[in-house]
Image 1 (cartoon, helix red, strand yellow):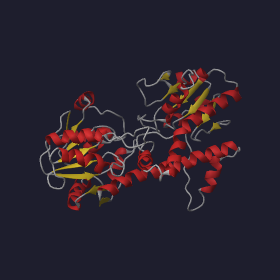
Image 2 (tube, rainbow, N blue to C red):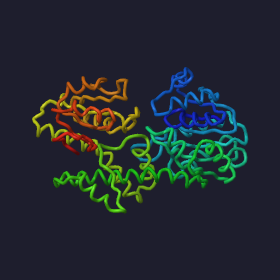
Image 3 (tube, rainbow, N blue to C red):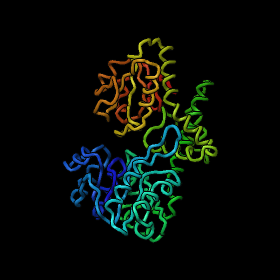
Image 4 (tube, helix red, strand yellow):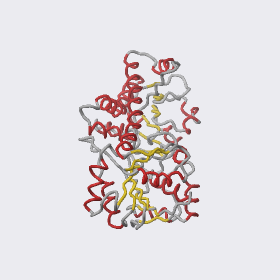
Length: 405
């Protein structure tokens, strides 16, 4: 098996397959990433990943920049969206499939794990295969097996989450299912490719819409001086109500991206989705406005005394893709203001201006602390925040006088 793309999804998938008896070669165009893996080091932090990596190394996994000649390929590369059209940008998937076509033998199966909008495989992947002289279903088998894991809990979810396999030929789908069943303890459903594409996008869209409702509810309650957290707590006592908690925005490479695929493909139909995504995308700027309000109320005239705690898109991971904090800083730059100070215990390299790498130094340099990410670290250090003005974007701080979004 050749796993193409060794990022947040491809690497754990390759390691899991290898550690459960599948012969795996991982391929990535990034020479530095491949060199790091070949040196025996993982490229990001994740609970259980280092142990899984060692198990895979013992099982014989290999890493290279070269595509392999084999009977099974798993393509797990990024799928961003065009910010103008909102449609999926399948360029990385297309590029990977083109390279696979150069080396694959007849009879090989190509599995697309990357999340794509419904119809992407029909419109972009099939033509690439056919242009290279292969007949799908005879020379090449095509399958879609969308990933379903989340940073912070990847190893557990790879083992336990249900999976979907989409295939033109059910018999081929069942064969691919056997590979995933080598480690997956959840239910594995075999369906058609378009249904598999749609189901993955719909899962993330469902979550995005529900997050947007909570964020919009927070704004309504702020406008009329109501406690959104008390209201949500009461509403959730109803047996059929489960409102999420509001937050500073949505990040990562799933919930903040995938729903836009439906907006781009169905602009006249996806109205609720469109408005929900706009709500979530504007939440960091809403938090920025709350910071300005609090600064004015508390007489803080120098924004150099304001610090953002947390740069990652969620708690206890080092993944900062599309993070609300980065979105907030980008919004602030449009105001030509000096960037706010930042600190995150999981980010060791400098990724923004005015970034600190020590909690005490960070806190000593600010008067207003904005809790953007609910890392365990901050929950264990509330005493260090005493005397600070605090904007808590997650309603986790037990200190008195805390501001909320």
